[in-house]
Image (cartoon, rainbow, N blue to C red; front, side):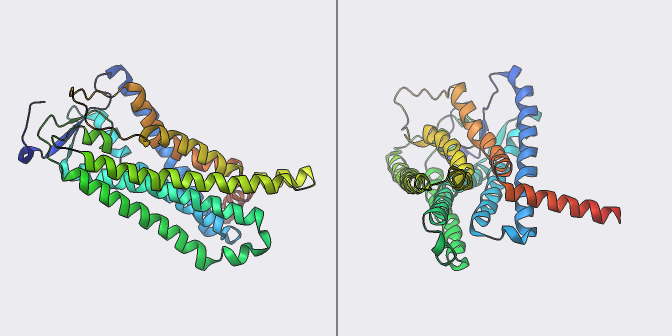
Length: 320
């Protein structure tokens, strides 16, 4: 791609796996399958939580938000990602890149905060069960979820605005599947120190602080569980938070690896992204949202019972 000046950059080229055509067909089928599983699995979680009154509790309200968030996150990038396999021109408009960056960054930051809110919910349920209905009332958990969305959106708006205001006078080839913010920053021909500083601050707020909050919550949770005299009681108490803990480990383990250290544009001008980094990005962007409903449904008796109940009602009404 030739050199362009700032005013002529109206689109970006998403390189993706263009250098590995033998992998494109495999990844198209694989990602399409996983995207359909994401829509189906998370859609079922939302429908079940809305239809079954027994699941109208803070934990399942947060779970519905998590499922809706995963659908929004993947839908902001996967359709474009899939369509790029069907055409030789793998481009996205400048404004489209900004919208995609905003949505993906907002969903990621929101999920960080939302997972910490879910950890607090489990902490209150296990460590202070008698006061749980008071502390986690509807007047509490609805603003908590709304605050997670607002915080993620505000942070994403700031990061996206700073990134898209930069001059792009070099190659407009993004060596990534999507308009990932770090890949876009490497194309800027201006000082990105402000962007790096803002991302470091954002990482502290949306990565480090929630991780510490979740860690401290689970320290109290585990200490409370270990004081339960019966093994059956300990097993039941731990089962109520095991699904959330599994999701936290998968989510933060991947995202910390990807975003914990924002990189400035290097002096040599080398902007190659390793294939392994792209695979990790794909894992975070597709596999994690696909696993969330599976983890919660397989490890949660209430969700499985609600799904069976709805299916039985459908079969019964269909038999009539």
